[in-house]
Image (cartoon, rainbow, N blue to C red; front, side):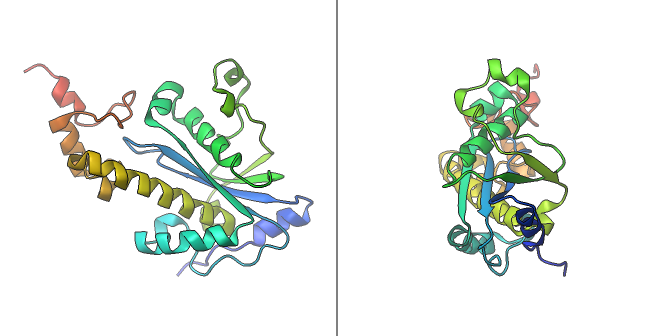
Length: 226
């Protein structure tokens, strides 16, 4: 079994002079419908070792994720979970929507972190200059410096914890939406491109929660002439 994530990197960043570090991860970027979700989990000098079992959310069963989520919320110095809707994804594009969701998570934190540790190699949280004329006001909140790290969700406990909060929050939303539109199988596929989801798109077309600006698989079959 691989080595579990730890706070080694976060504690090194704290020793460098950052008073509070936020681990950040997202979920829903590649889904066909539903929101994109970003979670932040902050740790400070007195934060204890993460709850046992914390891993990248993709490595955990739904039952384990939901069991860990409240423990993470109690353990973290602070946490926030933000969403951007399918309509916002269509209007802004997926990267700007992820930024919006991230800023919504940021403003939920009790204290703003001095540094953000972001999973991946692309800083989608810091708005480019050209966004200043078009973005919604809450997209323009100043954010702390961002440090990206590939595979941070496998190495850093704060990022892995954020991945669990993001995943459980979005899964709960998708399970609720599934009761409105059961044909798409969202309770199981969470809005991703599963065969049953694509088949339902071919038969029923997109729901109000699908990302209409995307090339949705199966929809072209409905649009093609007989």
